[in-house]
Image (cartoon, rainbow, N blue to C red):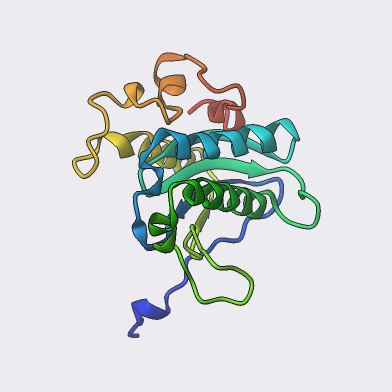
Length: 189
């Protein structure tokens, strides 16, 4: 069976109440999230949705052009699932921030669509249901090793990369109030 990779769509469905590994990528793999102020938008959204009891965040990493989360959608945020609210809010904030920089950088995200002028997130986010402790541990390790991989080299020690939960899991230091311990969900592997 031949599979045309151009037709391939990643699975992005998430059921409420279940824990998922989730990846979202900046459109055209651009390095929008390289600057700390854009990472702050991500953190602000996670904080807000957590405080409103819409999500539970167990792990995350914010990379220059994508994010990885382990999280649970607890309840709808109005008429939409929280991950949709996350994508909408962050896109809106990114647009506002880029408008202050001039239109050149914002133009990189221009799209020809009826309902929007710019698209910051690729439409093919990936959701993987974490159904066993082994799968959960594998995804947790993957998230935390991302910044120290040969490709990125954003830190020498994974616990030193501040836009991640590696420090929480590696050293027990809780840098983000909204983070919950994934090991407690799976009975410590």
